[in-house]
Length: 313
View 1 (cartoon, rainbow, N blue to C red):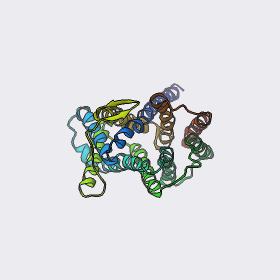
View 2: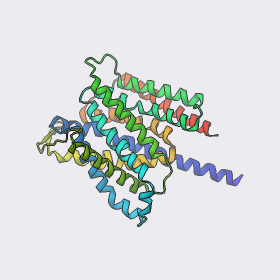
View 3: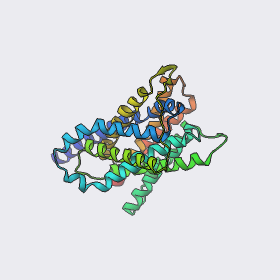
View 4: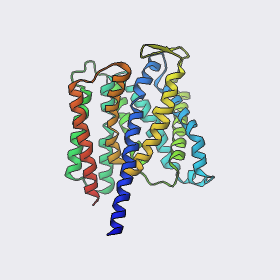
């Protein structure tokens, strides 16, 4: 009985660490739209914003990552496949896809398209386990997506540009890859995995730009943000340190503790945080419908978590 009690306590502690890291990661990721928008408006391309953002984040995390690695260089070679997938799909594709999408469709629709990736996560887990999720998990999926739709309110959006839809779906694939790859067991320290992965993602974007697959252009002009005129590097520092380095590091830890399915649905809270940041930074007050949608979304996330726990027993 004592051993069972200790095991239950450890599971509870792990879940708390996972939830804390995942929610903090979502909060950090949610700042990216507000801080990237002035750069895009000033003439930066989406690829350039993402390349600098991921590159700086990789450099910030590289020192602690190398210290944590403790000279075990063979681990990098042993994990080259997940590192490559994390960097190219979970880092570069997800971010470039989203920032390109919002140049053609409203931000709300871009977020909705990107977060269709959580459905891909559920489908992948079902195919891998050769077993459909339980009823509670499936109900949570439906409820969470319904809440997301209510929060974003994409209905009635005119002038739908299918280029934005295509980029949004690519972002969804990248997001799903991020959660699936992050959930894989690894002997690499989290900071090492994230720093090397983001470095690979940066290199992939630079190569794609050099061969002409995507535009890479930037400007040193000042940007306008929350009514202030700021140097171009100010939003980039936030995007690199908070919306990338901190967000990716905490997100990786969260997925390791919660698993890909639960973590991906906890990631939906990024939308709620984005609404909150818009309120604080842009004075865009959330309406009653958004508040109701937020409650529905959180109920769906809770149902998915309970359902996954029940499916595991």
